[in-house]
Structures are given as C-alpha cells and as structure tokens.
Length: 422
Image 1: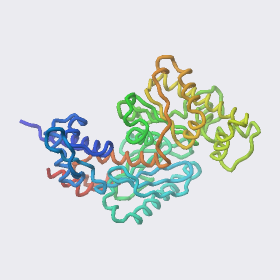
Image 2: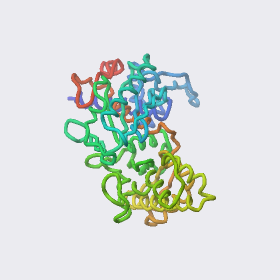
Image 3: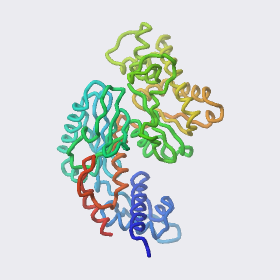
Image 4: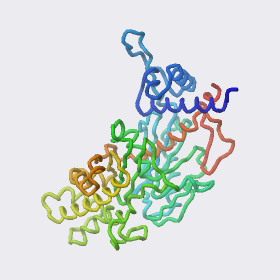
C-alpha cells in the first residue's frame, strides 16, 4: 500500500523547491521549473497549481515556446508573505522587512552596540525596532511569516530544547535565543552573522550563478572577523554550529590579546580595532573611531608611507589566514565583505588575492578566486531574512504546532491552511 505520509512529504519538498526557485531565480514557465528543480513536467505543473491555490505565486502573462503554444509565466507573489531580518551589529541593530521576492520594503536602525551593551539592552532594542516596523507596515504585518536574527557569536541550535548564543568575544554570558526576542507571536530563528551573510551572498550576491561555487567561503570583516563555509549550497555547521570561526584562528604565537581571551587570533590582527591600534602605536594621527581611521588609511596609502605600511601588514596577516583556509577547505571562491572587507578590497584586492594564492599550496591556490561582496549595508539583515525564509520553506504545508517551542511560534497562516487542504 502507498505510504501517504511519504507521498505528502515528497510533495511538500517539491513545492518548497519550486517556490524557492521562483523566489531566488525569478519567474519561470512550468517547463523551466521542471528542468531547474529536477521534476517531471506533470509534477512541476501540480506544484505550481498547489502554490497558485495558496496565493503564493501568480501567472503573469505568456512567453513564446517555439513552434508550440505560448506558455504561461509564473512568479512568486511578492505580497503573499514577508520576513524580517535583524542584524545585531557592531554599532547598531538593523531590521529589514523583506517581501516574498526578497525585495527590501522597509528598514529600521536602532543605535545599540552589541559590543558595549548587555543582552537585555539588545532584546529591548530588537523589540522596539520590530514595533516600529509593524507601525510603519501595519497592512503587511499579518503576513510576516518569520523573523531571522543574525547574531555575533556561536548560535548553537543543537543544545537540547533551546537555541543558545555563545558570544564570548563581546563578553556576554550564554543566552537563550528566546530571551533576545520573546513573545512576538511570529516564528523566530537565529544564526551567526557571518553565516547569515554567506546565505545572502549565495542566494543574491557574488556567489549566485558562479560555476565554481560548489565549495566557497564568505569572509565578514569589521570589528570582528567571521566566515561562512558553503558546500554544495549548504552552510557547514560543525557539531555545535561553530564551524567558520575564522577570526579565532591563531596566526601569531603569543601575539596580541584577542577579545576572546586568547592571544594571536586573526581578529586581534585584522579586526578594525586592531588595525587602528597598529596605526596609533606607530605614531599615526588620532581619529574618533576605528572606521574613520581605516578610511583615512585607504585614502592616503598612496602618499603616506605609514598608512601603506599598516595596510600592507594587515593584508599579510589576512592572507596568512586565508591561505590556511584554502589549504584546509579547498574553496573555489572566497568572497570578502563587511564594511572593513569592502574597504580593504577596494584598496588591496589584487594584493589580497595574490597573497592568498602564493601562501597556499600550489594546486588549491591556483583554484581559488577572491571576490568582493557586491551586497550593500543591509546584507546581513538580508541574510537574517533568508534564515527565516528557509525555515518557512522547510515547514511549508506542515500542520501548525499547537504550542510554542523554544522560539515563539504561531500558525503560518492562510497559505499553510490552503496547502494542507490540497
């Protein structure tokens, strides 16, 4: 006898695959969807019909099909669902509201620094930012299907019944994710900020469509140093989601003190505070912030030997770390971003790529390409929204839970009820 539960699961996964393709890659005909998603023409048609009935996609005109009849063009319905991505960053909390096509509809920024405040303050600012987003987008808010938090530190989702944040480098005690954003009535998921950034680069940025992207690393440079590792389109997580802690790779024995408590970490050598400290130690002029200092170094490296020296040393440390990653992981692509990463790549991209290749073993060094992120300042918030979208797609068509789990949860809504009835 046919296993109904298995059949329903296959149908649910196929629906999610088709919807994800329409969201990330844009509109398609049913035949194009079948080819892209590895489905038969009949299965792709059935999945589209399910999604049309749920109001998640729409038909948008006809396209020619050679000698045959024109085929209908299917697109994700942008207003059918919304997702919030929250970037808990160095100097502020940024919350973006994204529609089902991942278009940014609104953004709220709250000036709270994760590096100088407590989890309680960040929790208050997240709630305040969400309330402001809801106030400004009241008509869309009933269709918000998830909130994705991009956080500084290790987000361990395998810690029993509760996801936990371990933000050792900013001096926080372990904190439950549910404590950072309680009682929202919307499903909340979380991940490390660099991993969120890697998602954004994979789906919407420099990695999308690249032929050598089966194995890639995405480097996030700012005050901290992070990395997301991608294999075959999936984030490499490790045992407790700490894979990719690039900033705490040791590159200098008994080197400078790192915020994590150890010495010689890459973050203590190429994080923005470390670069500014190196400038000041060598007699450089004072600035109000590390960001202003680094902007000065980049602008004046061509005519200021000290600025050039500090940048060259920074590149030397960075490429040492990157070459180790190339040897260990053998990525085809290395994408560098974050505000500091963008500054360094603007000033030293050829030097960074050449240094990484020359310090790595010859064969993997020849294979890697080093690219600059092409996403803007809301890239990590976009990554947070993608975390929420991934969770939504995983549960698309499943019955809504009767009670909240370790993160606040409600019914996905009318779209889910429609799919369950199919």
